[in-house]
Image 1 (cartoon, one colour):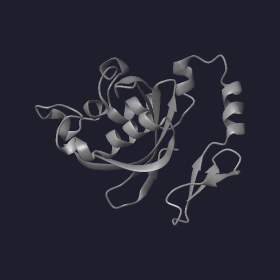
Image 2: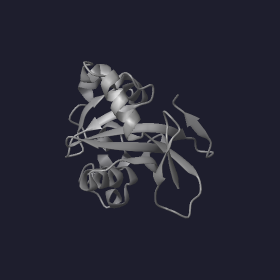
Image 3: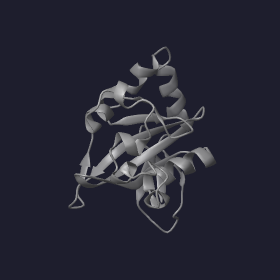
Image 4: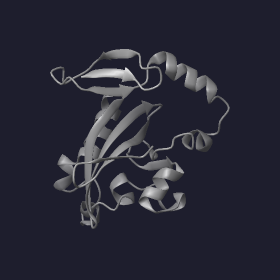
Length: 172
């Protein structure tokens, strides 16, 4: 798979799985540092609002510490009702309502969102356009998400929502 910078379209590197020929996007170091400089002086909340797509920030225990308005609108809850919750609790995963709670049921062992976040924390690296899903009372939702690890926090960016018919619905 070829990793291309979303900002300048520069080729970054090849990533696993190598046999897949499609292109995915990330950010090259030059653009990353340019964006940091442009956003210097912004408050954390103002920085989150620079994203048009849903963005959630988690701590090392996978608890929500911040979210932008796009994310809060998606989960239909105000910030004071999601800070401190595990992701499955905020998104109302069916399995989070079981007696064991979010992250501790048999179903959670194969949870694509939980496992991606744990992998991001453990390896301290970012992932781009990874497929994840969640089961709620409204049915299954599939997404492509990117994660960014920074200072013991994980930034989750919901890049694309995949409809039940397999069609992509961009958040842009």
